[in-house]
Each structure stands twice: as C-alpha cells, then as structure tokens.
Amino acid sequence: MAESHTSGKTIVAIGSIPLIMTLGNSMLIPVLPKIKSELHLSSLQVSLIITVFSLVAAFSIPVLGYLSDRFSRKAVIIPSLFLYGIGGILAGFAAAQFSNAYVWILVGRTLQGIGAAGTAPIAMALTGDLFKGSEESKVLGLVEASNGFGKVISPILGSLIALIIWYGVFFAFPVVVLVSIILTWVFIKEKKKEKEAPGIKKYVSGLLSVFKHEGRWLFTAYLAGATCLFTLFGILFYLSEILEKTHIIDGVMKGLVLAIPLLVMCTTSYTTGSKIGKDQKLMKKLIVLGFIFMTVSYGCLTFISNLSLFIAVLALSSLGTGLILPCINSFITGAVGKERRGFVTSLYGSVRFFGVAIGPPLFGWLMDWSKVGMFLSIAGFTFLVGVLALILIRVKSHPEGEHSGFLETAHGR
Image 1 (spheres, rainbow, N blue to C red):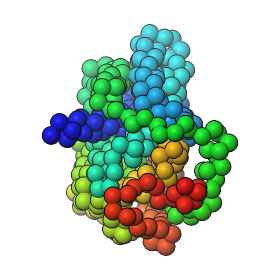
Image 2 (cartoon, rainbow, N blue to C red; image 1 turned 45 degrees about the vertical axis):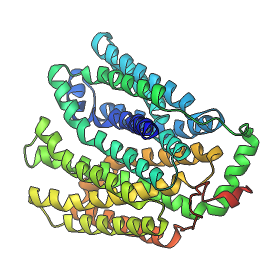
Image 3 (tube, rainbow, N blue to C red; image 1 turned 180 degrees about the horizontal axis):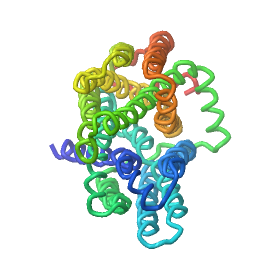
C-alpha cells in the first residue's frame, strides 16, 4: 500500500511538469491585445512573444534531451523549471518597471523557452524509466491529459489575471513553477544508472543506427504528433478570430468557449492512456481512427457557420487528437532503451513545438486565402498523415513483462 501511495505522488509530480510547459504560451494568448496596446507594438512584434518561446524551446529540446541521458532526468528538469520561473520574473519586472520593456520581455521569454525544453519531453522519458507496461501507458496518458488540462485552463486564467493587471500573468509563472519544483524534488526518485553513460561519439553512433533501421516509422510517429499540435493550435487561432469578429464573444467567455474542444481532448487522452496498456495493435488502430475523425471533422467544418454546431463538429477532431497523442507517446517512449530515450523523446517534443509555432500563422494565411480551401487542405493533410501511419508505423510484439525498447536490435543490445 505504501508503495502504491508513493507511486501516486510520483505520478502527480510527473503530471505537474507538462502543465508548466503548456501555460507558457496558452496563458498569454488572451493578454496579447493588451500587451500590444500598452507597449505600442505592431502585430509582428507582439506575435514574437509567442514565437520566440516556441522556437527557442524547439531548438533547445534535443540538447537537454542528450544531457538528461548523460546525467539524469531530475538534473535537467529542476534547473529548467527554475529557469522558466526566472524568465517569468524578468519579463514581469520589465513590463512593470523598464522603459525598454519589450526587449527584456523577449529576453525573459527566451529563458522560459529554454526552461520549457527541459519539462514535458524529459517527463515522457522519465515516465518510461520509472513505469513499465500498462502502467507506463496510463501515466503517459495522464501526462498528455495534464498537457491538455493546461491548455483548457490557461486562457481562462490569463483572462482573469489580466483583469487585475495586464503583466500579472508573467508573475504567475514562477508561482506555479515553484509547486512543480517541490513535487519533483521530493516525490520523484530516479533509479541509479546501471552503467556509465556512453560518450558523445558512441551515443550519436547509437542514435544514427536507430534512425537508420527504424527511421521511417519513427519519423511518421513524429509527424503524427506534430500534425495534432499544428492543427489544434491552428484551429484554436481560427476559432478565436471568429468568436471575436463574427460572434462578438471576448474575455473570459471567449476562454470558456475555447476550452470546450480542449476539454474533450484532455478527457479522451486520459481515458485512452488508461485503456491501451501494452497493446500496440490497438494503439495503431486508435491512431488511424483518430486521423479519420480529424479528417471528417475538418471536411465537415467547411460547410458549417452555426457556432454551436461548429463547436460540436470541432469536438470530433479533438476526440481524434485525444486518441492519437497517448498512443504516439507510448510508441516514442518505448522506441529505444533508457540510455537514449531522453534524446528520442526530446526530438519528438521539438517537432511538437514546431507544430505549435507554425499552426497559427499558417492557418491565418489560409484564412485570408479561402475558408473552404483552408478546411479542405487541412482535411487532406490529416488524411495523408493517417495513411502514412497505417502503412509505416510498425507494431512489434514483446514478451510479457518486458519493455526494454522497441529498437534494441537496432543498436546491438
């Protein structure tokens, strides 16, 4: 019973880590118009507050993934959380006190981007280290659900904090981070490394061998995860625009409406992670089914203008995303043995960040081109990725109780 109790606290600690990363962009989105007016910024300048964070994170993730393999997960996660909090404090003080606040806000967001790189992707690798089999899939589902829950509450929180003071959202980051630091420090106990980590030359050689033998399905899995985040943030950007311009819905109410598809995704992610266990055949079926749901949803949205019906049909794509992501997480986390897991999961996290970064601007460009063209293009793209997943994602069988990496043979273990 005591071991189960400890395990529960460990799961809560791991679940808090991706929640922090999600807040980085989503909590700021409803505050951006206020930042733009207060600091007299252009649309491009204010968008950089989001873009800088995502791009810095995307490029930093592989480096921190390697360091987590070389040393330990906690040795990367805890300093990353501290850096994330410090970046928020710097941006907040700059907004409140500095005459050239914008430049220092970007510096603070850069620090936060580096910090975010050491959170959710490393938490995925840590989950693979600490949990096995069906329990691992369940915890990965919770990690994805935590990520989704952060997306649900963050626009609402950002809107509420902005009612008090517009730059208060920056100071909210270190408060939330402190909770995660304490949980991670106290409740996550890593296993000691059985052998010394390989040098960088041997490490890179092993990774090249992995991608040489298994690259097709692994990159397809990366593409599937990035597609989910790209379409999710893109459609939220579109929905945010039509809520404000077409339906005159703004503020906290706008945040609540945006939360509906995210809540569907969050709930589905947790349920999926709880049910899939180690059944890779089921995972692959759910991935393909998820892309079918997304394709049908985006295809139908082309012809819908009623807001209630639009949200209901959009929820089908969120259901698809909630089916796909926990399954992809399980495939990616089990792709290699423990000594290279941090890099492989971090590269996946990096690709997801690029998906987040390009979603809003690309959807914005497509909106200016054609609403019909936008939805049909996205539906065609999700259909193509679903076909690639069906053809290229490989299912491998494991002896009961073993979970030492799908790709062990690729690096000669």
